Image (cartoon, rainbow, N blue to C red; front, side):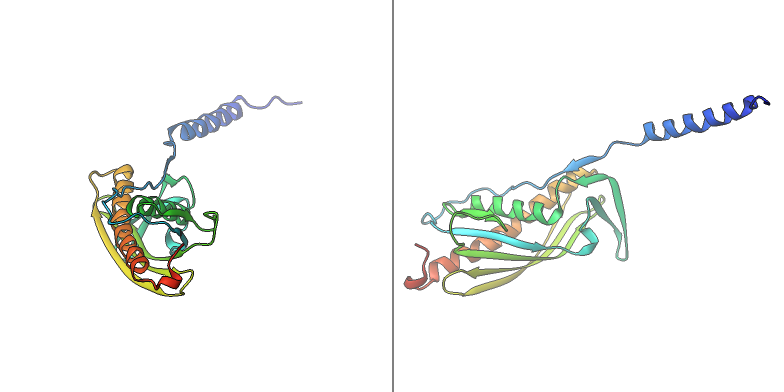
Length: 207
């Protein structure tokens, strides 16, 4: 049997070393969440009703674990090393719910499909139209929301478009900009919920 040429071992060793070096040089993925940022504001009276946030729908473009960064009007890039720690639609719902819990004093706020212990007095449906991010700019969020009363069947809809500049040029700063934008949108939704609760007929007011 003829011996295998030494050059084969050298070649294979080189390939293995190159593969290991490539793996070692890849930066680790970072995982991000969206947190509530709204600050509670004094209210005339304490709310005593259940609020359900969701379902939330988002564009297919951003419905993925990786962050999607806007390059220009017709081009985006996928940030493989910057990822959401949970599905984005769930993260948005949770951030909105956390904000509303702060803004509507006394309200019991949960996210769809969770339950608050009893049927929701008000349910908020959210359709995200735009969830743009740019490291050189910041966050642009456009969404259509609808607040529906569980008792009177009344509803109130709105469209929110918020742009927030990022305080830095990294992904963490961009996430913070998203959180600030969602906090601003939450203030608009909270105002709608409070108005509906205040103007509801006595027979359909939350007990």
